[in-house]
Amino acid sequence: MIHEKEQWTGMILAGGQSSRMGSHKALLELNGSTVLTHIVEVIRPAVSRIVVASGPNEAMYRAADSAMDHEGLEFVQDHYSGKGPLAGLHAALTASKTAWNLVSACDMPLLQTSFFNGMKRLAAQYPASNAIIPRVEGRIHPLAGAYHRRILPELEQHVIHDQLRVTRWLEEIGCQYVGTDELQQAGVQQSALQLSNMNTLEQWHHIRLRLQDSGGLSSAWRDTRS
Image (cartoon, rainbow, N blue to C red):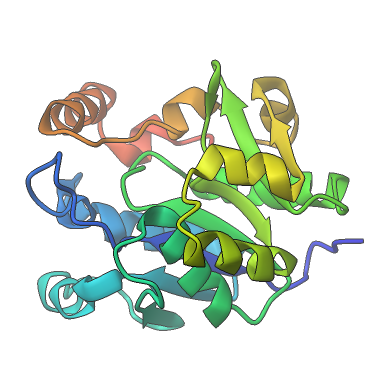
């Protein structure tokens, strides 16, 4: 049984090179702060500790984002470099000291605290599952969910043997997919919008325009932070 006060670790995957974007996604500016700072701020209330799987980017993140509150924040490097998001997840889970862990990629700037609290509630509903992953509007979001640390040995084997397809790995570990209705019942409003990600400059500009039209994050998410 998962209790509301059980400790969780927040894990932010930010070790990629952002080749399609042309610059590091985590350091892009939105609404007056970097995307990485925003994700740290919204995941922090839901967890006791935050691990950033930064790959080779730690020094750059620390130097470029002086506004970030580093309290309770730990940067880790991949144990298996050049092997994509599963290697980042492996590094973060290795550093975790809690059974359950909340995960976010660094390219999802519209996520809010309500999403992470909702994932904790859903993990309580499916305690035997190894991962709780949103499947919204036909799309799976493996880098925004909840993972149990017991998957670590199998994850490491996949990374070692270059079995790096995330969706295939999810099927093998016993993942619980949750849709829009379940997310809403858990307190996650506008899940499709919250799970918007950005891999190109065009997508980044589109998200910036949405924020400008809504008056910024504080206005757009007035009812979705709990």
